[in-house]
Picture (cartoon, rainbow over the protein chains, first blue to last red):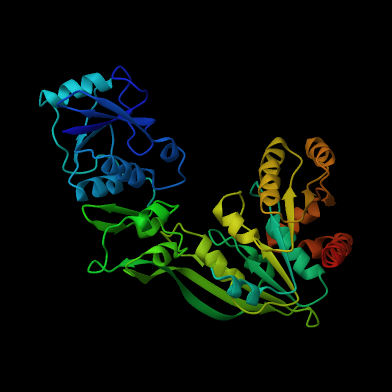
Amino acid sequence: MNVAFSATGSDLNSDLDQRFGRAKQFILVDSETNAATILENTQNMNAAQGAGIQAAQNVINAGADAVVTGNCGPKAFEVLQAAGVKIYHSRESSVGEALKAILNGDLQEADSANVESHWS
Amino acid sequence: MPETQKEHSCAPFTLAIASGKGGTGKTTLATALAEAAGMAVTLRDCDVEEPNAHLFVQPQWSRHSEQNRPVPLIDTQLCSACGKCAELCQFNAIAVAGGRAMVFAELCHSCQGCRRICPEGAISDKNMPMGSLDCGVQLKNPAAPINFISGKLAIGQVMAPPLIRAVKNVGAGEALNILDCPPGTSCPMITAVRGSDFVILVTEPTPFGLNDLELAVETVRQLELPFGVVINRSDTGNSEVRNYCRDNAINIALEIPWERSIAEAYSRGDSLCNASPVLKEKLHTMLQHIMQREESA
């Protein structure tokens, strides 16, 4: 399973970025091999609008099966859900902690967005 | 917007009144210039998020029309989920997920690029209500009527540019078009000033005024539009705006000092020209200079 974590830095000690669409970047972890790759999100961080939609598109294109993030809005949620990507909200402080939590089955799959749309 | 449509609507001279900062006096200046022109003009209130020029022009309204804008409608039978539309969209209004294209119409700027790039011809236009246009005329001076056009974004709508384009394109326009532009330097302002023959940036001599003037100057320079500055309430604040203009070779076309009579007239919805006949003369002269200079350029 490929899990995309929203992260403020590039390694597992980085904070789990509470923002999804405007996360600093994503760390994509293959849960079988533990191999981690970075998915830049600079463009969406500075996007005028639709950051969540585009971030969702990017993690889908990168082959993520699941997303672990702090908050996910309705549009990003809709896009991720359409692609069958599971969404987990986590309050864990670091990406490493969040990885442990999802592997231990401590995180529950979200069935809806947990924050409101920024737009309308 | 197809180029031909724009050219068709372009009157011989289009003067845009813009600013970075809000509340510097764009509408006051735009409406006063329309009055001071001494010729038939078309005044277009492009500040569709909060139009207010009509309060000062007080036109006789003649026409009201609801306006729609095109947003993509995906034919799911034809869509191959290739993702070209989502890739093209600069506004993140389309995503392709789970083998289908998803449209977030409220983010769409109605550029119709997706429709053009779709290799399957799966995208057509769907009309989305965006607001309304009102047209009228003010005949205080019958020899120099002010044709007036105002756009108003519908409540809940956030996408101003398509309606601004409608305000700019409706009717042929008189020999002189004056555009009262939205504040700021983002899409609405750029949509409004784009294609004009000259831009007046109204500012005030304060740190806020200067900060936003610099942004506006960068914007119109990027758009390669000729421009000048009008300093409103020019005898207040400090001299930084003047220094900035001097250092950057920017023409200060006019300074309007602070006057209680102007503020009082404004509060009644009366015009700058009525409050200060001297200023009306100066506005007329400024307009003549701008038009002559640009037309001979």
